[in-house]
Length: 205
Image (cartoon, rainbow, N blue to C red; front, side, top):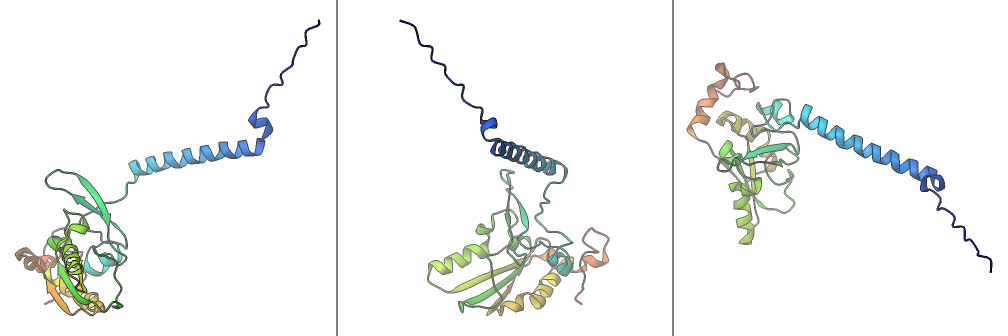
């Protein structure tokens, strides 16, 4: 009996069968690879600036001497472990919850002005005393907002300027200023030759 030879047809190559789809996938692969390499290169050549003080050429920097842009990154360094992390300021450049100038919830508003201790530059923003205090009030069923308006290195003069030009917009029921002795000395920094001497665009007598 004669043998029957079954000819098996070789499966068509994907590229030959779907040339447009294949080209699209190849192009997408190269594009994603390019983006990944560009991200690495930018990270090495032009890293995202991180600071725990802020910068001069930002909206709050131009107003108060230094500060963060809306949603800017804040550098946090744990002094015990040396671990560096980051979080972001709110839409107004403050290390606080998102706020509006109006008070739709009719909360009792406390605005606190301060320096690095109020800003909390070595802890995540959720661990700053203003954030923790508001959480505690909420846990006790009290409608209180603790608004943090501060930057590391601020003098009491900068705190006063921030109260007049920013803090009063929140219509606070209570205002607290938190400072240490060197914050008073820094009111005279404009007459010195230090790196902060020419940054503050105002002076209070």
